[in-house]
Length: 274
View 1 (cartoon, rainbow, N blue to C red):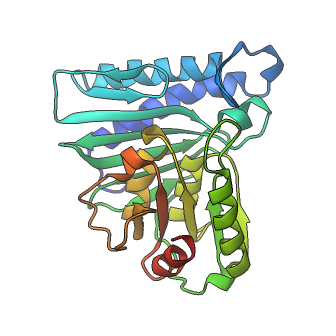
View 2 (view 1 turned 120 degrees about the horizontal axis):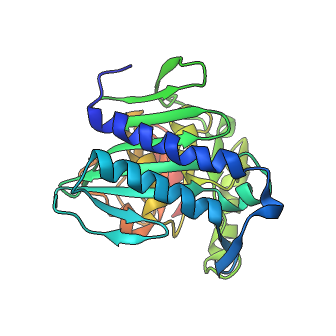
């Protein structure tokens, strides 16, 4: 494996432990205990159990770290320099419908800046991971490791762009439809797959050429931001003017308005969306 710190190994191990409970319950959606915490936003028993397994694993291996978890919320730690940001099941609606497109996402901040990320596609057994300054990689189910680099395409007409639409009960429908119309008219296609974490991982792997979405949560994107940057992509708030990404500011975590693409494609995609 590439020369990554033990921290990345710890994150990947935790993701695999969380995946065991998701694998067990996937396909048994009719038997899942389901509650609703908001319009079209579901929480399953499997979701909560996966988060608990991930939390227990990370707390054992990195005692003192802080946490931001989708279900549990903020958990403080004695180590004020590190914080894990965790989504135990990104793509919950897919999971509940038997759609095998969902993932576990674990990011970590160091001194307030995103430092490493792991996204695990449970069903395909694909582990995407990255650490600042060390590149982005994918290990598939056969154990084959591949370095990830976003292709330097700059022609929108041959590009496919991933996105996520605001669901019922969230604002921004009209704005999204306007943006969708503009991007559809200039590109080879739009993909809406229901997992922002996997959209970002697939962008890093060259399966998509760009991604945009608004009002995402920190746990949806923390790991993916690191992976995309380390694969050579630009990650920026949709509503900023400049498109140079220094990687030093992660205001997109709080705004949740994300635009990502290769350096060549970014300004062209940005122009369609502003």
